[in-house]
Length: 344
Ligand code: DAH
Image (cartoon, rainbow, N blue to C red; front, side):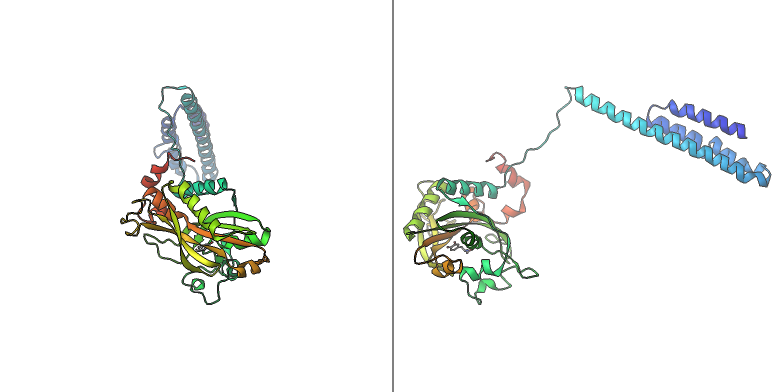
């Protein structure tokens, strides 16, 4: 039996080395290790041996089995490797094979619009400033002259974080951070994300984007604000678009205003988009409140400034005729693909 076994292993070795593909491997495996294999037959014949010889011979059979298994395993991985190399060689040389299609991405409409806004203000001599999304009460409220009982501080409106921080509700935080770090003259815009505890609806989203603008120098007046706004509107929406400001209230500006542009859809005649008013709201603005200057150590007797904040979603929706803000965040590929060409 010992001899029969050695012969079996030799035979298996040569059969395995003759294998060319996974199928051959499978057949050889069945032949040598399967239920009806010789090896299994030998196991059955163990009973014919005297009991004291059985364990030793059982071991020998097992060793042969392990050896054949190892040979099969190594041949099988050789075959796999060879197939792989072969496939690479084929695809590297067969020029008639169809190409591998790789889809090219594009920018999100919000990115396109933000970049356009950046360009407009850069061309007017503004610089781009940045601030953190996670900020604190001081930069988001206190330094912006917002009283402790102001409704915007409410838990229902502001996302407070454990440990005392908050997700900024407005990019106005960057006004403070800029004035803390740089002396006037200052002329910055700061585009970025803002967060408010709002339910998503056609005109609200808990995450949205603003562009803040801040200009501080000697002799800055409201006329500088209206002039900047009208230039921005003309470059962004076309020279036939006019702008205006209306009185409003913000804690950090005095006087405060809301900025409108004439309706880009109807030219001011009145339509559904402008709710038949002829005007579209663009954001808040005003002259920097002297209290804000005091908080950052700028002398309000020497310097004046204007600031405004625009909603980027609003501008994107107007520019691309997007009726619902949620469309901008759902990121349906059918919507995004429409902007693929607009690489900027
Ligand atoms: N931060 C204000 C908001 O989110 C918008 C705003 C109003 C920004 C007046 C300003 C400003 O810079 O001067 O509603």
